[in-house]
Amino acid sequence: MKLASPKVAYLVLCWNNKDIIAECLDSIAKQDYDNKDTYVIDNSSSDGSPDFIAKNYPHVHLVRSTKNNGFDKGNNILIDIALQDKDIKYVALINSDISLEKKWTSEIIDYIAKKHKVASAQGVTLDYYNHKKVDSTHIYLADNLQSIQYGYGEPFTNNMKFPRKIFGVNAAAAIYTSDFIENQPSKKLFDKKFFMYLEDVDIALRSVVTGWNNYYVPSAKAYHMGSASSKKKASNYAFFMTFRNQSALLFKNLSFVTIFKYIPRAVNTDTHLYKWLKLEYGARTMFKVIWGRVWGILRLPLFIPGRIQIRKAAKRSDSEIERIIKSRGIF
Image (cartoon, rainbow, N blue to C red; front, top):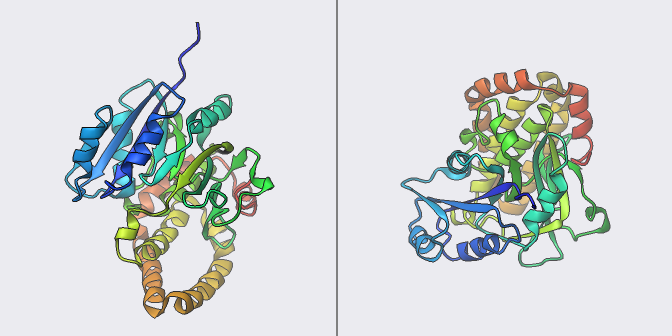
């Protein structure tokens, strides 16, 4: 008798996504993986999204929120609900602007099933509008302390065709293990103080520091439209939030020795980036980014409890972390 596959919970956040949510939910329903449930939280949409989902996808566990919880708190709410089902071994985070190929789930789970201490895995995420262009193969922290989405905007090349251990996964379309989630120092996967942007880099860095492993499985394909919800906000919102949150993820997870070692390179990169932003997007955007950086530093005391927890749980040495940072996220 064939044993049942480990159960997967697909989690989708919705915020005014009535125009695109159907394709996402349809691609989840069509996965060639039978042991699954789908959960959606609607972050107080005004476009009729929750009623549309309830009417057309009655099998979906729908949570109607009266406020916008952001990406982090919204996912934590769904994770808490999903993991009440003790049969769930994997949590798949799927953005509402993602469409999955039929074998996305089975390809990833087949690959990681026998791996040790797995935190997460992702397939290759491609541009929805141009399938020859990469959205991401993984994320990583560079040696200038910038967060990078590897392969973004590049063609899918031969060196991207092989599975491997990576720094971390892009949470637009990724699978996390329930084992990793339940062993978090804070007992939550996402830090809600991030709200949105770089929260997946925070998780990735945390997993590396605390001794967990992440994987890339290129046979699993997903297609990403890109920031479908945040584009509905102010145009500089992503810049502000990214630079606000960057300081927090470093402060929380890295030793001060490692941070100070890379600070000169980070400052040099920031200086050139500000000049580029002014030329490319104008002074208003540049100052928005600078304010994001300043505000992020002012908020660092909020992350002291998290830093204490993660540093206590650290399993890899500073030298190991620095070697990994220099590797561009490929082990």
